[in-house]
Structures are given as structure tokens and as C-alpha cells.
Image (cartoon, rainbow, N blue to C red; front, side, top):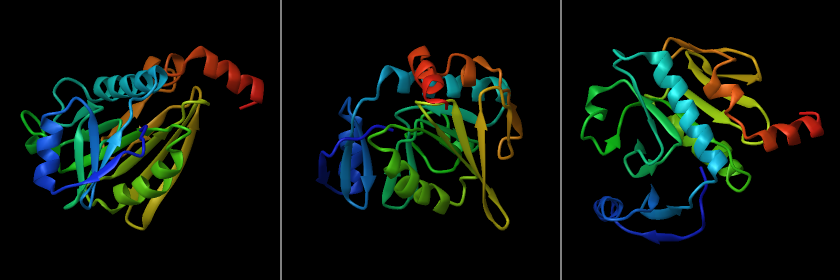
Length: 200
């Protein structure tokens, strides 16, 4: 998720009022409000295609539903993040709900400017949220998907590349490696060419 260093402080109620009356996106960290910058077209395409892949794999009758961009996710009483994609299986999070309190899976499309924040700050917050069972990082530069899965002994890490399918235990679904939404048109051709040139 792209982010720019424009910050201010307010109560959580003021934060929600701001969100409801603004076209911009903000995250909330213990009173600190951070303005999120708009992502690139590649960023938006990857997030959308990932959401489509999850929606298709879950099916029409699934209780679990994916949401793409701009959905507030409460990871702690005073911390609210905006992942690129989030899935919730709690009916209380659907419909008119503004905030998702019981996310099961979150996805972050990595940007050069914010990758360290996603990997260290956000990853720790997501892992501390008990309802979150899986966390996915998707690279914009090379065809790589990283999946962190919660287990009884900790977190298990898996990495997948072009053509590889992967199973999401939290949702009991498989995302096919040849799926259009993951590896065929997930990446802009210029990025794929760059990765090939670099031997990635």
C-alpha cells in the first residue's frame, strides 16, 4: 500500500468523521492519522485481480467475502489499517459495516517506497490480530507471491512464483497458478520484461 508522510493527530471518533467526509484514505495509529497516497495503475490492477481470484475461488454462496482497497480494518483498539485486499467470514463485517473487525486474510501489494513498512510494521500488526490467519504479500516487480500462514506453533512462510498454485488454509481454497488474476495478467508486461532481463 502506498503511503506519504502527511500526518496529524485526532481521536478515533474524529478520525471516522474525517474518513466519512473525505475522498482520501487515512490509516490510524494510536491517534496519529496518516494520509495514504494513491497507488500506481499496476498496483491497482494487481489488487483488483487478486480480489477477483479470491472471489471466484470462494464462490457465490460463501460466507467469506473479499474487499478490495479502501476498507478499514481494525487490527487493535487504536489502530486501523487499509490493506489492498481483505477477506472476512464474519457476517457482522458485511453489509453496511464501515470497519472490518474480524479479518481472516489480508493482502498487501508491495511498493518500493513502503515495502519496509509493510514487511515490518504492518506485518507485525497483522500477526498480532488473532482473527487474521493468513497474510499475503505480492510483488509488483517480479512474479512472486508470499504467504504467511498462522499455525499452532507460529507462522509458516511460503513463496510462490509464476505457474505455481497455492492453497489458502484459512479459506479452504486453492488459487491456481495459471489463473488470470494471479500470474497471467497480474503483472504489467513491462515489469515482466524487466524481471526477465534481470534474471528474476
